[in-house]
Amino acid sequence: MSATSSTSDPNAANNNGSAVGSQLNTTVTPQADLAVLNSGPASAVAGGTLSYTITLTNSGPSVASNVVATDNLPSGATFVSATGSGTVSAGTVTWPAIASFASGASASYTVTVTAPASGTLTNREGQVLDLVADGLSSKEIAKTLGLSVKTVETHRSNLMRKLNLHSVAAVVRYGLSRGAIGP
Image 1 (tube, rainbow, N blue to C red):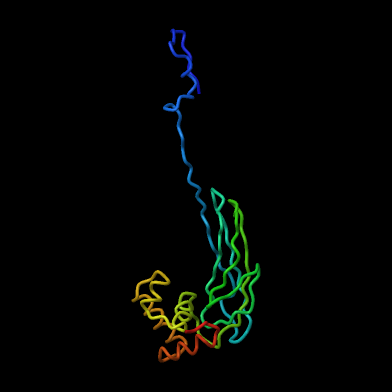
Image 2: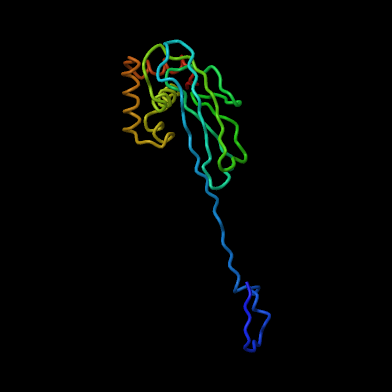
């Protein structure tokens, strides 16, 4: 930017915007809109193999840095494998960080599990199941998952009903049998 005039200017050195007070510094904060889509079959045969796909997309406008994808296994399912070097711990599959995930980019991962003997549990119910098996109280689970204690108790009640389990000890045994770490 610069300015000129046919009128005499006693200080022409400041007409180009280079003086400290005339400079504008704008900080641009990067923003990346990450989306996750899970897709797979609506049903599975008890004890059979089930595969589903997780697709991660960056809708931008900026590059996303150090993106880590995680997925909670369906409750009652037993982990078999994950593409993309995914590893499982306490019922959660984690993939290596994507250092620089460009705007418009996508990444897909496939998880294969053995379907449980029966029941349909949400991934959140599976998380609660695993944490109960790890010996955590409802209050500790709520803090870990960022939920209210009442919500955790509702999830625990639902999973116990769906799996026909009648005590917390039965939930712990069931969780340990599916690979939860336990106390």
